[in-house]
Amino acid sequence: MLQIPWTAKKTNERVLNEANKRGSLVRIKKRQATFLGHMMRRGKLEHLVTTGKFEGKRSRGRQREKIMDGLATWLGPRKVSDTLAAIKDRDLWRDMIANTYKQAT
Image (cartoon, rainbow, N blue to C red):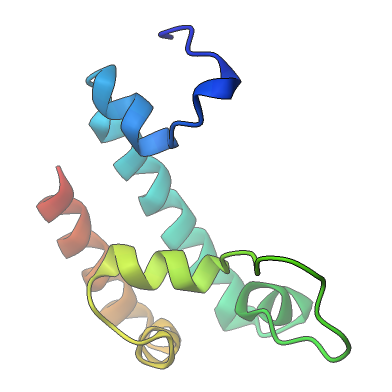
């Protein structure tokens, strides 16, 4: 794309902004949100993985950003618990994603 070396330590958003490809990142977020809604409504192992609720010791160092945290910030200033409650209602979830997608593009 722009042949930026990995040592430049730029975020994906910054590189896409420099390449004028802002819409592709928004489409990726939309796909992640629809897939996450599907997985959370199933309520199996994937639910535990995406919410990050595991028993045991935490790993050392900086904690990784959870999928839900990134999605909650993309959807607007909401708490993760509010986002989880909205996922249960499929129509509300689809409306939230559609509205956020329209505002981002």
